[in-house]
Image (cartoon, rainbow, N blue to C red; front, side, top):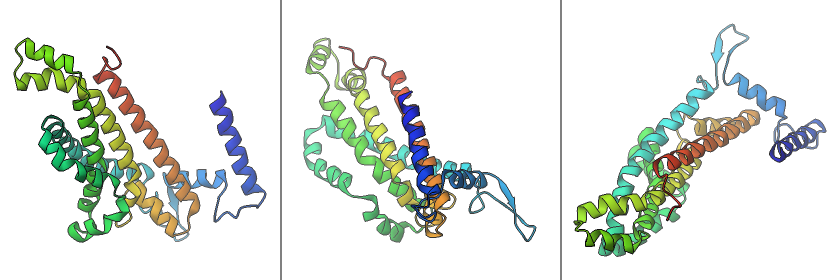
Length: 259
């Protein structure tokens, strides 16, 4: 109830600011204008010339979202495979951890806009540079989450497994992997969130179709209502992705939080 009340109050404040003329529509369109922009981006309109136009930038809004999700799925999927492997290596082999850890933290600290230009030079303005950017955004959180999970494995479990005759491979698969899985999934959750926040940067150049590219293009065209509609869609999609990952974590690691 409190959340609904806050949301209603926010809408009333937004409507009041725009209706009173305190803020010009160019800077803050009314809620109605944003809803209309959202509707127009999902329907076909008849132009004065008689030629129909559908969606925004010739794509429906759901197609823009799907294109962005596909890029994120590929980039994060590749980061998941590489990040988990590197994380387990660094977590179990000390000299690899000492040698590589500074570079992982260096990559984690870099803002995506800092190297998007370099990726475009290397891979062009197509999807390859976008996928690489999303891969790099997701890689370090997955690696660090995996390392944390491996290093936080309780020593008494490892010693008990060795006492029962476990070899290094069975130790990894039956003790370290289950113990580290909650941290690995937390790293994946952070990686997906970070990759989603990077989608606008990834789609600045030739990002149509793509919800980030549409937000950027509509902003450059001073179509503020559509820009805000895109921002709202990006936020809702992020909440749904995070909710799915939280549910998946509960399903995959039901023992999390137990002794």
